[in-house]
Amino acid sequence: MSEQVEPDAAESLLHILNDLGYEGLNPTDRRRHIIARLMRADWADAGVIEVNDFLLFPDVLVRRRADGTWDEKPVMLRVPREGDLRRARVLARSLAANEKIDETRDRDMFVNLENLCVLAFAIRNNTAPYEPWQPEPLLLERQYDKVCLQGMWNKLDQLNEVLNPSPNQLSSGEIVALIAAIARSRNLGPLVVYGPGAQTSFVVSMADLLLNSVGSKLSSESIERLIQAT
View 1 (cartoon, helix red, strand yellow):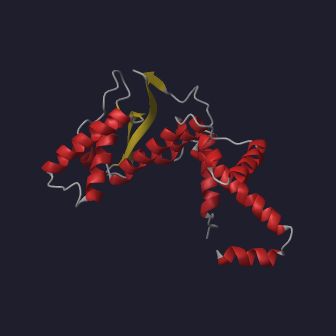
View 2: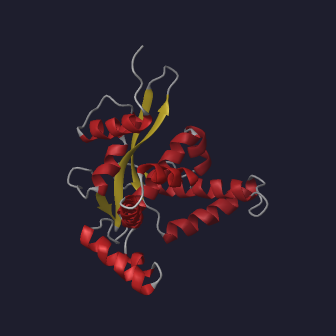
View 3: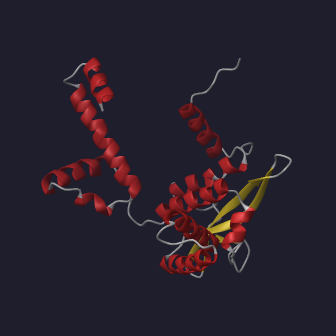
């Protein structure tokens, strides 16, 4: 019997293989490499283009075929702006009326429909003039499984973070300065100038510092009991 790889180790191995350009993975796994490159700010070969003041990011729509193979459709993703979100809501209300979905009583169904409309605006053809790949949200829903569309929605969230102008990296000096600033102000205001990635990194760094500080005064057994009690 082959030895099982722990989930965390398997995930780490996947990222390593992706970074090495390994092409033997299925399409869903390979798509992660695009976001990884963008988050490292290495955009030279990522295939990003600018059209009418919008950035378009390469991706693929993926679905299973009857023979078990993957069907891949190259597309471009455009992160929605406020105008897109307004148009998506108007369209969602029109479709909801036709589908007898009440925006208030059937809130979860309406939100899903609105997100589907946003996706219809965001998923673009990969050739000029880069119009919506499937402008009819209900047809898009029929053509692709929910898990595929949810994956594209998650990708848009990640790309939105890529476009966030707030810094997403913290140096050790900045961490110390932030700790001092927060201690002086007695609130988290100093963190607002940083992006979500940097904020998460700061919280994790604070946890490490606290654990190291407590660890110098407590035994390993005491620390373990504290962790288990949380």
